[in-house]
Length: 334
Ligand SMILES: NC(=O)c1ccc[n+]([C@@H]2O[C@H](COP(=O)([O-])OP(=O)(O)OC[C@H]3O[C@@H](n4cnc5c(N)ncnc54)[C@H](OP(=O)(O)O)[C@@H]3O)[C@@H](O)[C@H]2O)c1
Figure 1 (spheres, rainbow, N blue to C red):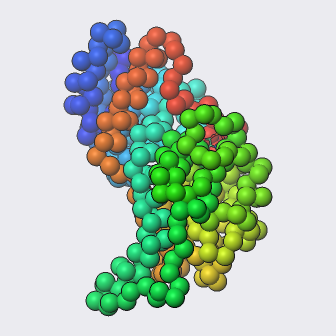
Figure 2: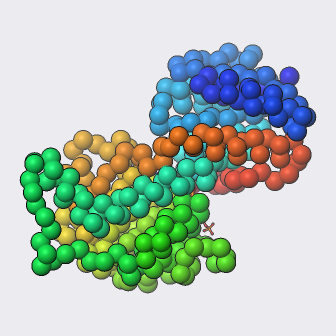
Figure 3: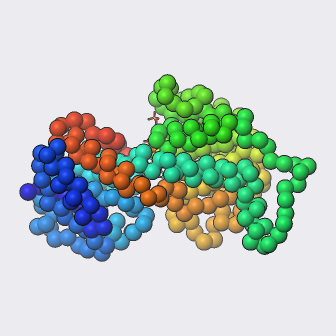
């Protein structure tokens, strides 16, 4: 009998849901569970044809290693559904090269990530980072009314990558009154919650009028190192950067320099060139930086949303239909 490889933490839920959907899917699966640190035997893996890692890779590195170790040794694996949206890690290119189909849960955590991004924007724009610092010192330090912060309404946000995350950031930012320009390769559609859509080649020209540069695109050969020293220097004094995509899209040394010199007014960073962010990184100490440890996404509803995509795709796989969120190429695949 074909088998589903999944994690021990979610096996009971998935088994119950598979049983409920058996009629629609028209097949049954054995469920193989992987626990943290466990090494499944080769014989068990021979029957595995689909795999689903629910949850969050970063939450349990030992479980992640055990799961992907098993998946890599499953000779008949034909499809793996992932809990995340980014597929730039080298293992995904290796799976694609082996002929394993990959689908992501892009969209499942888009709302919480967008809320974190907007939270970072509000913290920086409304002076909350100064309030938190003063609060820890029990200091009453109101804003100097001779230099109040600028109104957010009317400022320009450029959102690079107008997918599930970028679109939700754009929608929320427009509700606050910002003018939002999206950047992506495909043309504008009527549902895009933005004021304008531009091609990636136009980003450089947009930077001098950008108050909030938001990165929400994948890390690919085209985007790696995109926001370099020259492009950062084109942003107007007082601009901010928000990065909820991948650290490798930004030249981090140039970013630190721009923040130190006050050329950039601040940044909310969820992702970094090296993760975990090393304890001696200057980013921890800069007063105008909000750091979250690649942690913008956790939210109680994410696993349910990931599983819903998995089950929709399971039905599509059996009917021979195109899969939702299928990955055809990653940053590491040629
Ligand atoms: N911080 C976190 O915890 C976290 C969580 C999830 C995802 N992420 C990161 O966020 C990224 C976006 O996630 P998502 O779910 O929104 O993905 P998505 O729905 O696949 O959207 C990606 C968007 O990026 C655009 N894009 C691709 N290449 C581009 C380029 N060279 N220049 C400009 N736009 C480009 C795509 O449009 P076109 O194809 O039309 O260009 C699409 O609009 C992921 O790839 C991942 O790296 C981070």
